[in-house]
Length: 332
Ligand code: FAQ
Image (cartoon, rainbow, N blue to C red):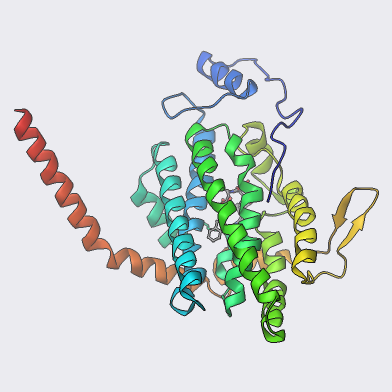
């Protein structure tokens, strides 16, 4: 459903090569030439830290993101919808694994990242702190949340850090399927009863503004953007991606037959974009800081799942240890 031009003219400014060590100069030249930085390459500590922050938060978002939809697996309206939903939620878990693995290549351990999530030190996407109240929420998450995630992640396929960019290619392919399944589920409901149509509209009303906030604070209030853009980690700014998402979604809403809950949403001939209303940034920051409607419940569920799974991890480690010992004995 989405395609985006990948070449962004003027993205890289000429490197300022005064007083750079040979390794810094090599790094800067690689970024300048739009090459990839790989785990074994030298990189500035701040670049490494930025990537660990972003990739681990992204991984946390994927696994916490399993919870709102997972809530509906046992109540899906048909066997077909249940099978699709199980597959989708499982995919999100897989995305978390690719991303934790990508972050591990930067010298951070899985345990450190999980501890940061569980202690509330690391963030995860604001969007997963809202409840899924009816079945239409599942469709709307696919259409709008996965839709926003794809819009944000397609440029990350060209991120300057190799393992992250490669993980993103696969993630985007799967998210694209997620987005279509959500849209199709909603199309079916919109051809159904009046009550079903109202469920879809209600879900769209509750999720629309939260999805616009997913792209992060406005560029002017985004502390990390400028440097992340210079390093080729971020390719398109928060505000530009948000605008692209609005422009792509308005025609989809028309086909679906739902109204996006924004009286200020209208086509601007001069800008060749849709204008839209004000996002409630206070509500966004309140949620990011841990005070959204489901933050506490989400974290408690993750911590419990981690603790309940301890015996599985221990058994897997013991088995791997035994296998390694056997291989060692055979080789001797
Ligand atoms: N929620 O300076 P910026 C998905 C934080 S995956 C919470 O603009 P940056 C799949 C930000 O971390 C969704 N916090 O930061 C799925 C920073 O805080 P810090 C996740 C947010 O990093 C679908 C501070 O605000 N996707 O949905 C949010 O340059 C369906 C200042 O912000 C990714 O993680 C937010 N929405 O840009 C799964 C994509 N926005 O770290 C299940 C990768 C901002 O200083 C079901 N990440 N913050 O404490 C990114 O592209 C970037 O990190 C941004 C933020 C764009 C999210």
